[in-house]
Length: 216
Ligand SMILES: [Zn+2]
Image 1 (cartoon, helix red, strand yellow):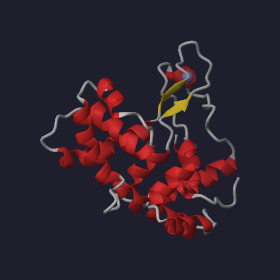
Image 2 (cartoon, rainbow, N blue to C red; image 1 turned 120 degrees about the vertical axis):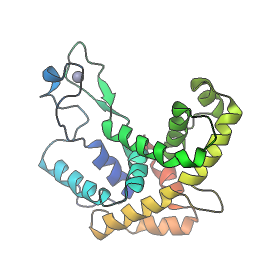
Image 3 (cartoon, rainbow, N blue to C red; image 1 turned 90 degrees about the vertical axis):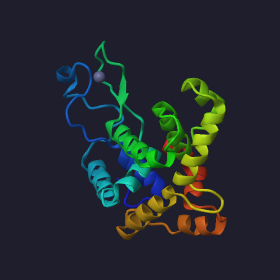
């Protein structure tokens, strides 16, 4: 168990990977029920640390929490049950729920535009997780035109991660959890906050530059 994290992004990534199993969700749920997925941290210490971080996350408003979950939680949970029928992974329900919250949140901003849920999902994931999928690839995958992708991207990016003139909602969410984790002594090194200020980047840009691997 870490006594303190030096990075808020790292603390969130660890806590959100630490899935507390509540019954098997595989197709043969009964057979899989007692099996612990491989990527679940085990032991009292990991559980305690994860619970401390998650309890701070749960104090945030729903949108802020969802922004952080989509940014830092794994999209899929690895299953190591060994059953022949098992796909070895399944969607992370916490991630899927957070993405749904964000899709509802951005809906009023996209009024009058085509309702293409895969497109909106892809763009929310692209801006928060920096997946770097091109507009052309998204257009092909989501059955739409590249200009439609660009149009949606402008709106979604401005709202969630901001523009040069205006910070986005992610930055506010990140600063709130950062403050809570530092107050709790879970994140304990001030160098990161200072580095953010010195770099002139927003907190979100800074996190994604340093911690892209943690987020994915
Ligand atoms: Zn399984």
